[in-house]
Length: 115
Image 1 (cartoon, rainbow, N blue to C red):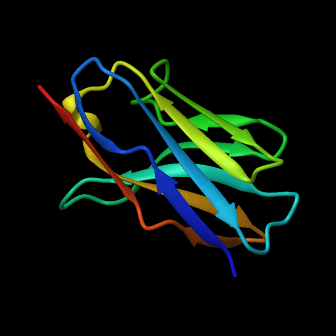
Image 2: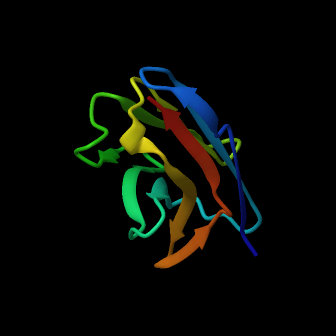
């Protein structure tokens, strides 16, 4: 069984920065994709960024140039460095692990950006 635990969310002013972390435990395969998704109230969950075990990244257009995803394979941990935060970034951020076409999800961490 896979467990994902997020941390690092909080309240920040517009223009500020936060760094999210997600530690995976359990049955983790060497080939996988980890990522971050977010969901605001009343909206669908949307992709923020993903990163493969080899380091290939993918970003949503809304966060390109502001967010950076990275990972530490030895620790099975993925990070999301969020800079130049905007109020529209306010959402619950969820960590995701995809392996063998099976998705695991964290419980989410709230990010709130004030004006």
